[in-house]
Length: 498
Ligand code: ADP
Image 1: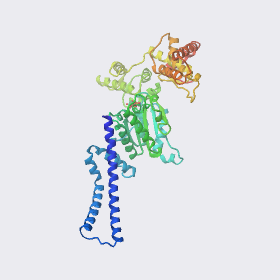
Image 2 (image 1 turned 90 degrees about the vertical axis):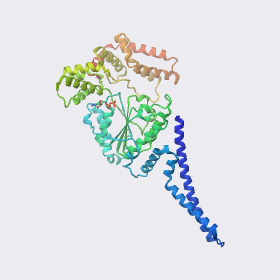
Image 3 (image 1 turned 60 degrees about the horizontal axis):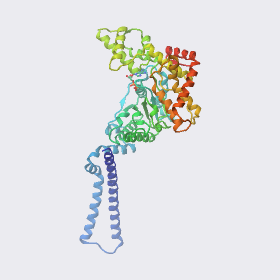
Image 4 (image 1 turned 180 degrees about the vertical axis):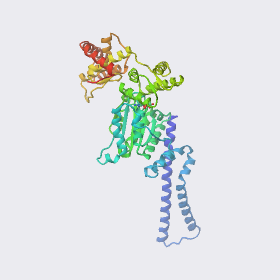
């Protein structure tokens, strides 16, 4: 069925091309015949008379008129021949119009279902995360004053990739960029591109880019880009791959000064196809993590801006470690609902504690970390920070690694140790193993497997992992004091800065 759909599309395109070509041949033939006819009349002495003369003239005339009529009504004829293809025709027409620069502003709404929104969100609506805002201010400035940059031949990245867990404000910040720059905002979830029909996703990507170009300067925001941007070949899916290829083609097909900025969001940068991260595509990356204690305070203050409240907001910001902004918003919402239920007009401690109860055991199950859980997390992260000597936050997943083009065996072993360090620290300091950050362990095994299978550096994955674990145990045992100090700092500040 998928192939059929695609085949029909391709066949239609071929038919259409044939029709155009035939019409051109017909017109040319008619003109050539007429020229030849008059040339013969001029050059020969024979006089043409009677029915053959008039018949010839009428035939040529009819041929010429028919050609012009067919040429004029070719679209209608085509639509009659292929009724299903109507939308494709409109698209193509719009494409032609756009390409020729005609109707640039009216184009988008007439042929596409992809409509932009006008964002009225600004950076003021985004609390905390000031470093991220600063990074994106440059993008806003570029959209507002493109000439300033073009004058010096500076081209801004075509794509900005926002990387971070769900609910930390990736969509919000992209909307804020659109709002600050006062440009249309085209929102698309990548999952919505992937249809059951091969080719539909690619068509939608094409529509989206055409609409955005027509409304330039504009912002295209593609949420959860990993739904189409997974490395090609990983769990083969024709539709996803054709959609991804179209996205890459579209991104290559416009100049960075075209005024279209693509912002995409993902929480799984590691699964993205390398082609997406190459220069000229999403070459700027902005990492967002769960809000810090200060960020949570700013976010809570923002949510409480127009509400009367009388409770310890600082305590709440410290009690909500591990919460994303969306969870904080849910918490305040629930608290307000409780306040309304008890006929109050000021948010009190009791509203907050009722809300806490509700969200912990309710449908969303947003968990508050108790002291025991926090201690486990902090021990894990302290071990990681000690071994890698890198700054990190209490909730930061993964490990920041030095990037090597040609890593040595020793460097690869160091990377594995970095991934294993948290769980080994827990084993040493707490005498127990915990199910925590499983992706770190998986990464350690992935590198070890590469060392064995691809680089033939080792004979056995298990033997290497055992050896490195044992080295780590000794190293951590010899530095318990330092690691405990790291843990305390993490518990207090939720981050470790050297
Ligand atoms: P993501 O795209 O990362 O999944 P969203 O941008 O959809 O997250 O944010 C989820 C919710 O949290 C939204 O209601 C948004 O308004 C709110 N939110 C997220 N980050 C912030 C922030 N920094 N300041 C204020 N509200 C925020």
